[in-house]
Image 1 (spheres, helix red, strand yellow):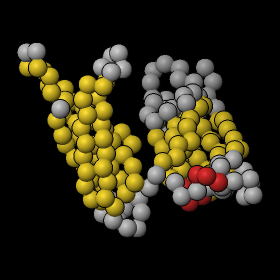
Image 2 (tube, rainbow, N blue to C red):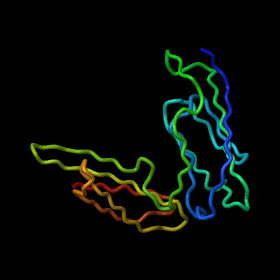
Image 3 (cartoon, rainbow, N blue to C red):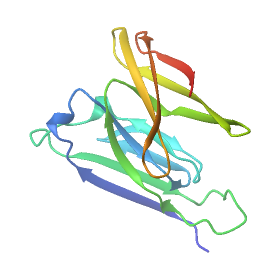
Length: 175
């Protein structure tokens, strides 16, 4: 099957109400050797077609109708070998997200749950990582709610702490 180079370009607006939050471009899958530009600035490369990744574009984002469109440009190149012995295709083949969140937030992939079962008793060890992306120390409180398959709340764990400037904190709890 043929290999090649493809370009994707998307223009979009970000509402002014987003100003003051983190703005992140998330890609679930881009087949292969991809390079990325946002509003004319090179923001990075990603070489594997099978892993998700993200770029924080907060500082490059234009907000509201007055500032114009934000433009993402993606270049995919499958001409330089493959990761498997099968035909992999090329391009953006999974979801792409524009995500916004506060400057103090739970880290991406920042909740880890490990169940331990002893007889009819089950314990969940929950690890939560909270980030501070500001120039001042922040106190935080994070709550994890446990629901059963029917959507009923069966437990809740709360952690709190203090975050250093541009720092992270990880807390472990059990329920």
